[in-house]
Length: 119
Image (cartoon, rainbow, N blue to C red):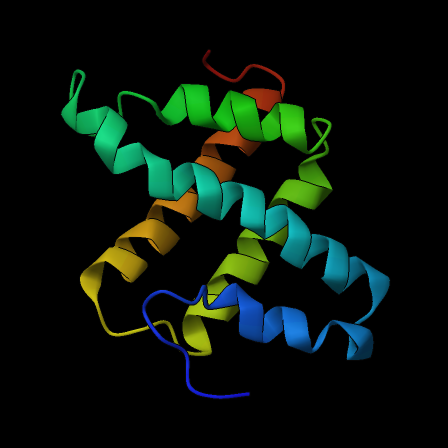
């Protein structure tokens, strides 16, 4: 596999090693892709609306729906995002911003399913 380019998702390198991963890690990586996708869409929507964070709850609810409201899957996805970032995101700030947004979406999703969470 060649070097990662800005047009090639970083997760594609991780996906290449899926056969060596446990089923849980494979699932976490697939689930993290849903959070990455939502995070990458956030900047455009925020510029067109109320500003930063205005869609965080919407994104978290969308992630909850995609991951069947399963707190453990959301936490595993967040861990996979962090591991992917630590393994080497491209140096451009947009990649890091997306990683941070993806983790924040996961965090908010777990807050929404905990008893007594603010909605």
